[in-house]
Length: 145
Image (cartoon, rainbow, N blue to C red; front, side, top):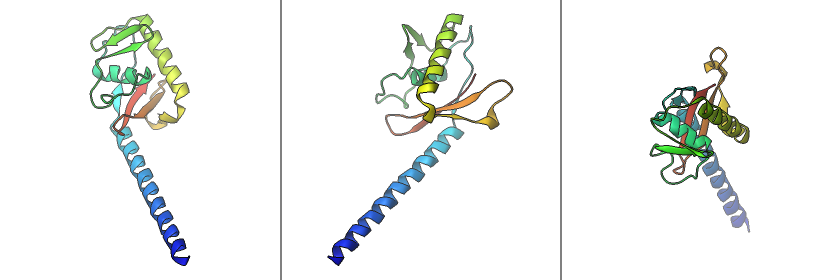
């Protein structure tokens, strides 16, 4: 009976060690991702979309997470009824749609949106938008609006 208690206690200690090790590793991944976050410039009329912009919009649009998310930059993304692709020029209507989508994403994912007061400039409010991709990598975008 005493051996069983010792065995059970040992297994619990080992389990706690594994869980705490994973938590520390995830925190390190998050810090590393935030330090090397991909910067996305403000969406304005006339802006030409780049790969980083489309990657950010892919996250905001909450497209299906598949094996390519996070490893290969998406080339296009559907938002509402419109498809946005790398190289597209934005109109005022596009900017309005995108800004609404970013605001909705922020409301739904407050736990994944981290404000950094130190990096906010002037009237811009800046956030890290982060998620875990299908590979378990923590991916961050830095966006000011």
